[in-house]
Image (cartoon, rainbow, N blue to C red; front, side, top):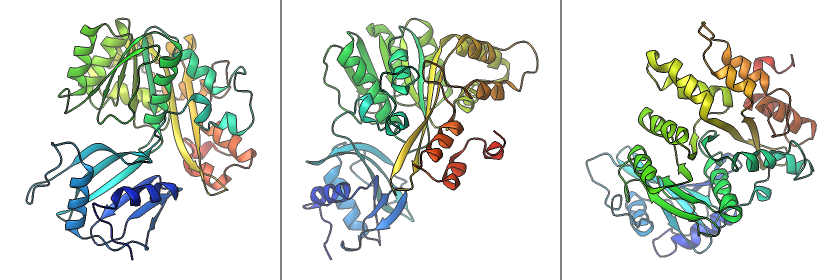
Length: 376
């Protein structure tokens, strides 16, 4: 069996990436494990890792002095970026039963264009520039001068890649001042037509919310916030979007309506009507995505898209009554696609089933409203 050492770790990571790993786990007492199309598989050609092995590998990979030393008797968590000759990686580290482990996620070295995101519309042969194609929705929202654009989905669904594609599209086609606030920086942008400044939380700034407030003094046109993690950051994003900036961010949610609800619930009850009114004014679009296992043993990205219409804004806006049904009303607006690419997650899953891309059983597992699957 092949030992995994600081001397060969770059080669090992490159080999595992070539094998199709979407995630790589280095854990005491096991060989390296890879997630292949959603299934964790031990790579038994490699030797079992000891705690010292994992510590030494971490210290080889980690260039961030905040995380390099693992304390013996204290909790430890790390989140950083590293590179090999083939790939970039986002690394998360922690302890299990007092012993260190690492999880590495390969990232594309080149930022994919919209046409390289493997959208369902493209897989089904739709005309890339046709009315209603999802990329037209992407392009439309990125032409806006102000507002809030969200990419949502579970961990590992490719949110950061989609956001990077948004920024790269603007960088290649428009002249803007762009500031990104990330934890950690995953994709490094080279300024093309736009000027891009990238700041990393913990290295260049202490928090998302603080960096967002500081960014407003630097005349940005577009601000990317890696994640809206708390009420303070959400409030700061609201203010930035309302004062003439285009704000991009992510949230962990599988659908548009639930994303609206989650944002509103971050505010105290007495402020939620005000928050709904503000959100109805600034929200430009929500793109929710999931990576779904295919019949061919791969994974297909499936999107729900809500590019805001006047009707959807009026639904989000409080009407003075106990309108608890507004979330279902939002879902109902996505049943029919529109010229900006609006579509519901469940209808897209059904479309993928009809095209023979995914099975009906898998589609129902990923459905937002599986109880309504047969009724619609």
